[in-house]
Image 1 (spheres, rainbow, N blue to C red):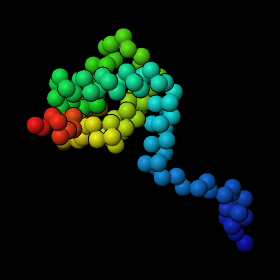
Image 2 (image 1 turned 90 degrees about the vertical axis):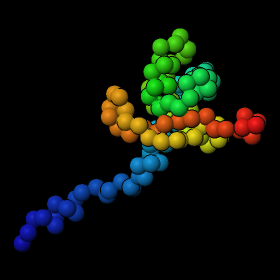
Image 3 (image 1 turned 90 degrees about the horizontal axis):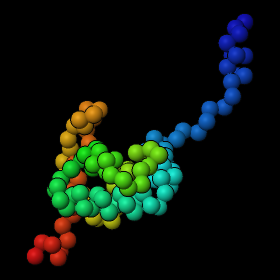
Image 4 (image 1 turned 180 degrees about the vertical axis):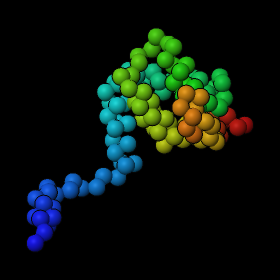
Length: 121
């Protein structure tokens, strides 16, 4: 007689599987909410101005430039991801390529302002 079936019968049920992308989105949105409306407005405006002046840039480059300002700073920089995602959904910026992070070495999207009908004339 084996003891193993009795041991496994005592294990608690497994928690439901969570989609990693949904979990990441939820955490990003929670960070943005915690950072506050002042940060969201200030950082959104900063991203638009930064890309207008500098053209293409990664989020890392924008974040480093913003961190040097006296504007409201987030508790966690994951909050910036919520701003980038909203700008992309609204069609204000778009991804034009990928570039390796100077800090971590991972691939980052290169962002650029989206052209509007008025600016292309």
